[in-house]
Image 1 (cartoon, helix red, strand yellow):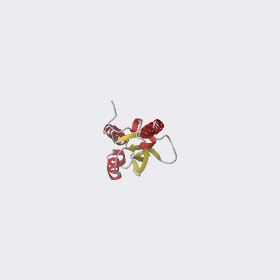
Image 2 (cartoon, rainbow, N blue to C red):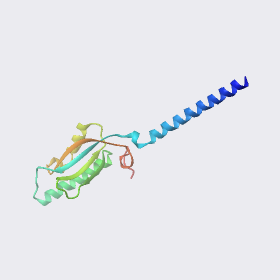
Image 3 (tube, rainbow, N blue to C red):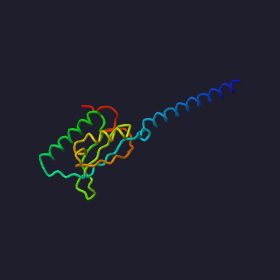
Image 4 (tube, helix red, strand yellow):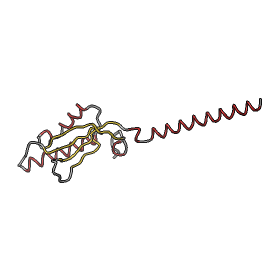
Length: 142
């Protein structure tokens, strides 16, 4: 009887330990950024079809372009924005949007004055990453 009790206690203890180990492994897996990958929108900005030779008009459009970037960042829609260096592909810059629906991302893109004026053209593609650092959900901490 003692032997049965001892074996039963050992098996139950091992069972509880293995359940605890599995639970801790799943918690670690849930904390791993690879398990949190989700979709964003990568927007490639290229040289648009319109050329504005008036420097005052061009400066005004790019001032609005920068104000729009700031607004979208503060609204937690824009996660990354920036220009490319000199290149032969006509790549001008990029945006990464955190928005669930492509159609709405397209509307947001058109809110940019430089894109609306045809100085820039936007190509939107789904892009995936884990929401860490600048991709954390929620408004940026000021």
